[in-house]
Amino acid sequence: MRAPSSDLPLVLENVSLRAGATAILDGLNLTITQGAPTLLIGPNGAGKTSLLRLCMGLTAPSSGRITWGGRLDRAPTRRAIVFQRPVMLRRSASANVAYALAQAGVPRKDRASRIADLLQRVGLAELAHRAARRLSGGEQQRLALARALAREPEILLLDEPTANLDPAATRGVEEIIQMAALSGIKVVMASHDLGQVRRLAGDVIFLLRGRQHERAPARDFLDHPSSAEAASFLRGDLVI
Amino acid sequence: MPDHASAWDLILSGDAALFAIVRLSLAVSLSAVALAALIGMPLGALLALTRFPGRPILVVLLNAAMGLPPVVVGLAVYLLLSRSGPLGAMGLLFTPSAMVIAQTILIAPILAALTRQTVEDLWIEYRDELGAMNVGPFSRVTTLLWDARFSLLTALLAGFGRAAAEVGAVMIVGGNIDGFTRTMTTAIALETSKGNLPLAMGLGLILVVIVIAINAAVWGTRLWSERHVG
Ligand SMILES: Nc1ncnc2c1ncn2[C@@H]1O[C@H](COP(=O)(O)OP(=O)(O)O)[C@@H](O)[C@H]1O
Ligand SMILES: [Mg+2]
Image 1: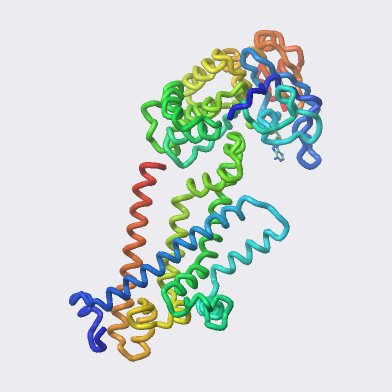
Image 2: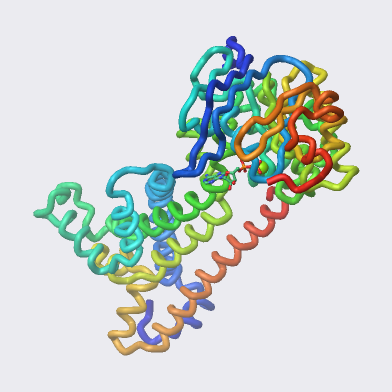
């Protein structure tokens, strides 16, 4: 069942990721600890998705070292991820959550009440029996959050969870994320929506072309970016 | 079955021999589909999820095995089961069991090959999500088979169609014994060779209608459950 050991802190030491000759991520040093959400921002292609996959342990770095609570073991026991385009299992909404619970080692007898709780938490209680793949984009995103929360993660990694959603759906998803953060889950989230950064972030990591250009508390970053690149990204200039 | 009767007369009169033939045909082919599914689907799924040297060759051979000629399979099973063969002591030759064995060998590759393709495509879609949920190898196979169930139904139907339609394998290992191993297809072959074409045609029609009915039933089930389960 659940490992007693913790996945925090998540530490990247001199981590690089290459595909052939091109560097996707280059020389990252990062420590993620308890606290308010960390937002990963940067233009398209900066390496946000790649970094989240490394943090989840889905891919191994080409060089450098990643540890979770001091361990090198990549098996994701106390962390969860919601992909930018989550894949719904070909089952009902509640069966999707049930599956995540089963994989997290939750005993069968406890699952029904947990499913009800989780669907309630993401506002999908009414749609429990709907085929998951027939849910709208926003509903699928919320179901993916329920599946991730089913793992009772310490670290919740989110890849632009509101990128394809309208403002109402975005607000719904942000509320779930805020509740998760308040309950003590460390949220690490990629975004390129500066309004969202302002609403959610405790601190910000600014990525550009696979490098970490800046890491700062959200207010400082938004109001006084220390690098010229970050300043022009915030102004909405094209940064490549 | 009276020689001069047409298939229509036989149906209307509830001819016992005709129904025995239909029953045996269905029993043999459905048993073969069930056995072939038990063997072929997990193997196909395993092949979809593993990488090893020589795998591409195995995939090509498996795909090619979908076209195994029924007479060749029949002959191989005949040699295995004949009195002087390695399994001769079991006394299975010219029994319905021998026919099930031959048809299982004939359609297991179809189910394995189609399952391999289906599961591999689904795996590409599911890999990250299952990886993120830390799903072990065994659960991966069962999850993918379950979530591919609607596509796999089509594979089952392909296997059933092949089994119900073939005559070469059941003829060789079953022997077309009246009242014991005679199936729809071997009866059709026999009546045709005797020149009793109306009866042969009628039997052929019955066979086609049964196959269509089974396909329609399965398709209806699929549509219904897709709507409700997704
Ligand atoms: N598997 C891969 N092979 C080659 N290039 C990749 C691969 N994955 C990502 N990339 C490249 O790495 C860069 C960063 O991609 P990504 O992490 O998706 O950035 P972001 O999420 O910030 O948009 C992009 O230029 C992308 O094309
Ligand atoms: Mg991305």
